[in-house]
Length: 165
Image 1 (cartoon, rainbow, N blue to C red):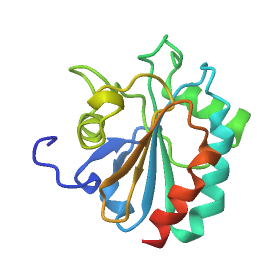
Image 2 (cartoon, one colour):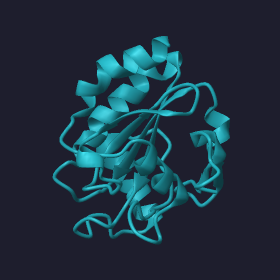
Image 3 (cartoon, rainbow, N blue to C red):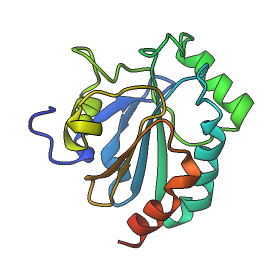
């Protein structure tokens, strides 16, 4: 599917509760796709991501978290444990997907596509660490890739611009 995909709407994943989640159901919305982890120095970004999700939901922003255990084994729990942690500690209400790989041969097809469409520093197609973020426009195309160190609140101007487009 990766090679033929023309937009993010060509992908599906499993929600954190194991149900199919077709990204085509988000057509016309602005998406912020994030690889997350529960035991990372950047984990407090969940609070900022939740704030973005709530502040811009009515205007069409959807934040989607993809737990990943590929960086320092910082999300070793089960999907159920991750969901509980995110809700209990950060009040996460935005959609969370089942744990995925974002790099390597077993990377989820969406992440293979995202990293090719929006390469990182020096053209890198790999994700360097937890909380790498991708802003997707209403047409389903990546607008910008953000580093793990980019705090959610620093994305507001780009989100506003994407929502206005």
